[in-house]
Length: 509
Image (cartoon, rainbow, N blue to C red):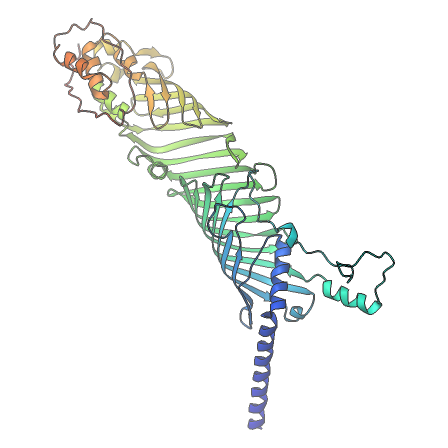
C-alpha cells in the first residue's frame, strides 16, 4: 500500500510538473506571447513590450521586463520601465478567448511622463498602422473586389475563430515602490513622486479606485511633502486625491486635489490646510537663508489653475506664524543699529499673519502684519509671479521706543489712532522678492541729517568713494546742511561689500 501511494504521489507530482511545463511552453510560445502583448497594448491604447512570460503556482502569470517607449523626442529612456508584472489569472481562461486577470502586481515601475504641446499628460498612443481591426473575409487583398463572391460555411467559421478578439479582463491592480516624474512642455520637472504604493480595483475597464501611499513628493524642487496617504480615483478624464493626509517641513497637511486630464491645459483644483510647518525649513527648501525666520506656520490655501500655464492661478489663503522670530534681515538690522533699537535687529513676533488673494499673474496682499512687544510692521500691495513687489508699508513704534530716538528722527514718526499709543511712518517696498528696495531709511532719517546720511551711504555702499571721503572729513558739518538723496535697499549689491557700522550711542536731548 505504501509503495502504491508513493507511486501515486510521484505520478501526481510528475503530472503537475508536466502541466506546469506545458503551460509555460504554451504562454512562452511566440504566438501567445505576441497575442498577450498585442491585446494588452490594445486595451491600454499604448505600445507595450514584454520581454518574458512565465507561470508559477505561487505567483501566477509573471511578465518580466515590461516597457512602454517614450513617444516624444528629446527625452531619454522609456515612458515606462517596470521590473516585474505579476498576474494572478483564472487557470482555464489561459485557454479561452477571455483572459480573466484577478490581480495585477506592478513592481518598481519608473515612469517619465512629459506634457504634450496642448498642455496635457497623455499616455503614448498606438500608431494608426498598429491598430488591429477584425477581418470580415478571407479574400486575398490582391484579388479584384467581387460583390458576388461567397465564402463557404466552413471557411467562414475558421475565419471568425481566427479573428475573435482575445479580451483580457483585469479586476485589481496593485503597485509597489513606484517612481513617477511629470514634466512640463519645456521638459522641466513639475512634480516627482517617489516610493508610491497603490492598491486598487477596476470599476470599469478604465476607471480605477483605490488607496495611495507616497513616501516623498517634490513640487518643482521647491516644496517637499512626505508620507502622503489618500484615497485615489482615476479615469481617463480626471485624477482625484480626495482625502489627503501628509507631512511637510515638520508639520502636517490635509486637503484634496483634482486634475482634469482631458481638458485643455490640464486644469486643477486644490484645497489644503496646514499646521506646525517649520518656517526655517520651508525657506531653506526654497533656496533662502534658514536663519532669517523661525517659528511654526499654519493656515490654508484654496486655488485653481492650469498646469500648462503657471500664471493661470486663482484663489485665496492665509498664513499665521506662531512663536516666530525674524532675524538677520539686513534692512531691519541696519535700522536697529542706526536707531539703537535692539528689538529691530531680532523681532520676537507676538503676531505674524498674511491674508492674500491670487489672480492670474499676481498675488494681492490684503494684510501683512508683524508685531513684536513694542514694534508693529504692516503692509498691503501686490507681488507679481515674476517676483516684482509693490507694497505700501508702515513701521509703528510705541511711545516707549519713540521717546528714545534722536529728536529729528523722533519727529518723523507721527501718532496714529490704531493701535493707540503708537507713532508710525509710511514707506514703500518695491524691487523683487530676492532683491527688494525701500525708501524706509530716507523716511526714518529724513533729508536734514547729512552726517547720518553719510553713515547710511557707507552702510549700503551706494555713494562713490569720493562722497564717502568727503563725509568722513567733515565731522563738524551742521545738522541743518542738506544731504544728498539716499536710495535704501534691503541688501547691498552682490559686487559691493558692507563694512561694519561705526555708530556710537546718541544722547537723547
